[in-house]
Image (cartoon, rainbow, N blue to C red):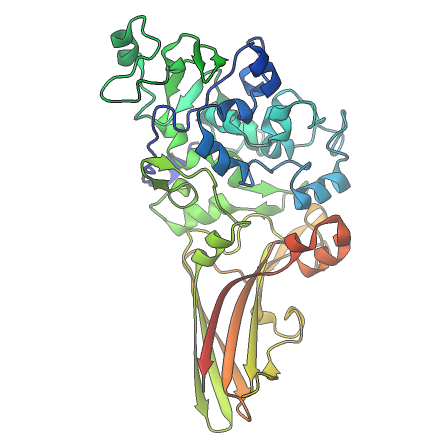
Length: 439
């Protein structure tokens, strides 16, 4: 079932120019072959570098996104897990639990269509979630399969052999009629200096041959959360334990805005293809309203910290090992630390300051996602939740109290376990909010 049938969803105000984010396919010219495509290739083999011909700014945004770096070849965290549970991402025939690795349905969808695991075989494979991967999704069928299993990633969609457009600028039948034999075919003041491959005829753009590329208008798919939920709805391990449940969290929030409103906002009529999330510091800094009030009461300072989740899903959401931790520190007039809520990470000594989902084995002990038999404690911030944490601090010599909220992509134990396999700048805590009170 489509997500938009489950909850009211406001269509994202994504409107793009005719050659703004509807990606172009190259033909069998020498330039096209160098870019990784030919007229004989399937549409899902088209490299994003071909799209760059006309969509330079959109390509630049996408290139820096996690969608462009989603494969085990480029994402160090996913890569570490993939190599551990499946195998090398540059080898053919890799299996997960004797089957084709299900993670490739989301992390390398073009490779998944060909049932290959050698992700460096084609640029379109190593590019992860590239232009074509999203702009050929025809219809979201929901992830719940008839057999009770989850249809993840591509398995949740019908997909097309034509570019799927957002609606406003992807209705070309009338334009084609008016254009006649004119390869430019633009009307109503559109750019008449570039030809339009979407009218159904091959064209040449900046010296590169572009094949006829018919395009369909599909706003229901591309302008709603249906574009996202095949991969970002939910994911369970082999034991049926929910690991990622962003879709369920979103539905429970009763939010009226869809995913694209936050993750692909529009500016100047174009949608932002950086698609910020848990790896985007700017997105993280906007996600929580964070404040603190401190009052001296005799020999004690009472500090109350308020955290408000501004998102229609849990904070943090997605991968179950993402977490938040709070650091509270009191300083004297020389800037020396005279009190702190925990030395180092607060996980063991200040449990309220460590916000995370715990996964447990059949004995109730914490374990890793693949071996989890159940969910344990979960004190992450729920959608739109406002929470207060109180601290009583000895007032002697204290002139300043500072609180800091950090976001972590991995549990501390996993950081230690993977060690140098994951770069330190990836696993380092990210400061996303802070508040100070002078006394």
